[in-house]
Image (spheres, one colour):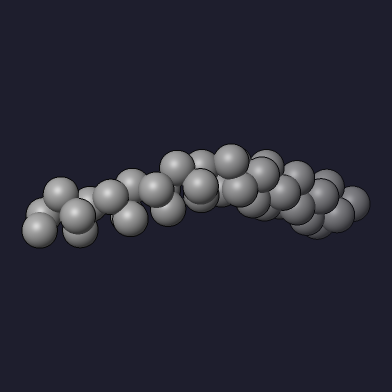
Length: 40
């Protein structure tokens, strides 16, 4: 069934997205913390 294949691909893509977000989040957090200090 095409639907199940699509759902499975979607889930894999979402998991990859969360994995990427998890790796990028700490850097983004550091950036957000540093930006206000630089602006002040």
